Length: 390
Ligand SMILES: *Cc1c(COP(=O)(O)O)cnc(C)c1O
Image 1 (cartoon, helix red, strand yellow):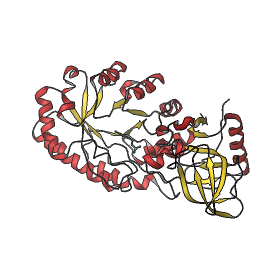
Image 2 (image 1 turned 90 degrees about the horizontal axis):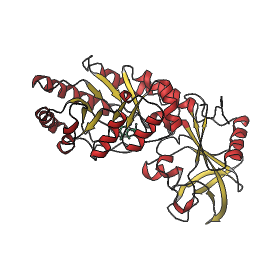
Image 3 (image 1 turned 180 degrees about the horizontal axis):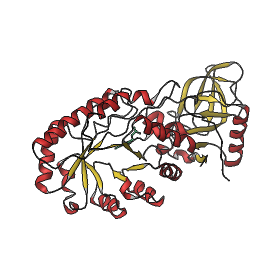
């Protein structure tokens, strides 16, 4: 069955408001129909987030990074909006291929690849790849007439949820050497890329990186190396886990200003992941059982840290959690997951009304790095994803 015009997450800016009686009863119906735990994926929010970021970053082609929520419906929804895609693995290549994404609208951004990974992406038709060092550059020698490469630079950012510059990217000082070597080998590097870190709180990170890239592009020109015609500013765009005031258009203002100084003939690319899908999913879990321990109520849910709440461990996630019916006096409570492991505690101190077994807990902003990193430890099944407003 199709769910249309269902609005739990509402439009931009009111996602943390309490649910109406009608909205709550629809959630209960969905659980009756599909079981618990569930992840409700609102395609309308996916569309809104994509369009919002497009407004925040005009003249930038947005390649959705599949990693935070690799799901067919998300790809299909974004494809209908005209999005491009950012791929990092063979499974992601297969997913966009299955949805009929044209390979010219994709870029493969994993800096480290096996030859078989390169071949798999090329068999699909993807011809744009990212490298970050000489070892990886040489892997493209056999394909040098068929591919264009981007060089990934590293800009450390200890404040981000995930500082990706520790693991990938070359430092700016060694970039020229790699670009010279590429020219010598006849492999075309015609782009620069970076990822300032996921859930980046400060737009200055992007500005700094863009400025360094502009300097590098000038050096490339002076040395007559192949022209840099692509600048990829990566992902990392943040979402508001705890307030509705955050405004991405304002957040991106310094980025827009920095990009205005990039030569107009250079094609601009970004690779948003979290921003597109984070707010689009609500998790629904049920109380399986409960206990009083040291005077505090413990509620055991059918979803936990080994499941949809894996982002607590892997992504430093701090999600807005609430009881579906949250009336009545609240006491400090513990929410735990279903597995027999003690690490499986979602929140050790959350204000909740008295709950019965079977009561529902809803959590918003659960679209990014949740289900994607969930396991089925202890044979507790991953939450089903139910798509709304397809
Ligand atoms: C994970 C990742 C992204 C998406 O990052 P977000 O922080 O979710 O926007 C984009 N590009 C690359 C190369 C990535 O590894």
